[in-house]
Length: 583
Ligand code: AMP
Image (cartoon, rainbow, N blue to C red):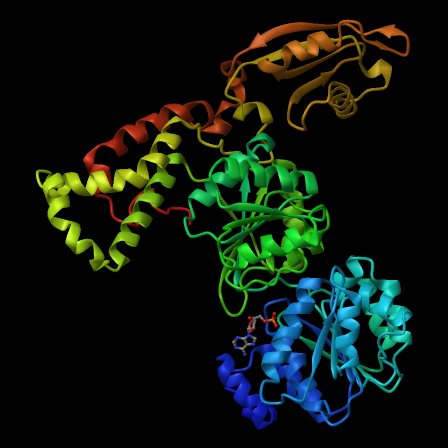
């Protein structure tokens, strides 16, 4: 195994590395450090966040800086304020035994004049966001015309955020003699173009497979109906009592509303999105880092700067349309040699997206079921039992023992255990005893929407058909859009020449009738009538596809809870049926 000494690092850096507790170089460090130290070369390194890339460029950079010369020698461009601060802090730790080397971070949302005066006092290394850097160059507050090294960190993120023009302009103020080191998690076309345009025959380094997700991450998906996403999220959290997670939503509105709902439901959650002030964002991040927040609900843009180790789960409340985004999101867990889980809550229509992501990350997803109430209760119970077992006794309690004994002395040991556990546990038990389990949705291509439908279904007649230019798919789209129904709300569309049939769940039937009461299409009155009411049984021909799920679930749930209430269920050991089955 290679050591840091063997990479060619000097004593002052080695001492700092020992202080940091790094024992062996990570793969990216092993590959980049000797090359960067031994030659004046450009480099393109493909590495995920969390692979130790800050040190991969930071150690050689510090070793190559001449502290005697006060000019700015190294420029690091990074996409967000948080990352800038983090990189600057790391570099300060690396140069702990080279106190003459000064690193200054410049980023938006903080005083320009303060940052300018730090630069004036001397900055061998400047770590900057492209926007603020451009601004300070324009005002003549920073001079990068003599730098020897330019590092583009998280290049793909910077380009995603629209910094291409800024980067181009910043680079035009740097000398052609410098070396450029580009780090990126993925290599989209835009990043290759930057490399081609601004770099000279760069050495290429790849950690893992190109464009692949980190192998330390297990990718899971949970198939649910769209309206049960939130319930699914709550259950995933409840089934992982020590969760420390990032939850991704697509829009600021969803981010805010999901975080609010979680808070209302008693979770340690917060929102992070672009509508918050910098101050609010800093506060949220501080609470998250200190683990006061267990679930940080964020938009992709806002989460870009988050570089927190120990995130146990990344939850995709909604998948992003951009497949690249998946890699960035899930790369927030499984960092620094730890393992992590990336969980995507998806609807059936998103299955195809999962397949595309699998091809990109070259890893398969595992399909999991949303835990049932009974499973969650068991997990919570044994989590509590383990916590009690690991708890160190606080002997301050000793002096109160006689009084407590007097109060509880009559109870048997078994009763006491049950009572203590019930203090915490009943909250979950009572909730899940009442809650309906999230329905399992089959990924089978053949299974129609109606087979997972608990209630009845209404079949409608409509006087539109092939003659009016509709095939079944067009009619389905037309009706769904016109009625503003969800993707799976309308089914069994059967188009004849001059009329058609379709089904909706019973609870939507009134809406359909009311909507078409006076509806005209191209001046023609459209007639919609109930053709027949159908119960689940009337779909008997294909019933075999659904097994005994769906409508029977409620029955099963109360049976399980009945059993759980008896003493026997408490005797179950971890690993036995139901306990942590899917985790
Ligand atoms: P980075 O990819 O630079 O954000 O690093 C991710 C985390 O890994 C940071 O907390 C680093 O301090 C840590 N780290 C970097 N290199 C090593 C190493 N060789 N050994 C252990 N931890 C490391």
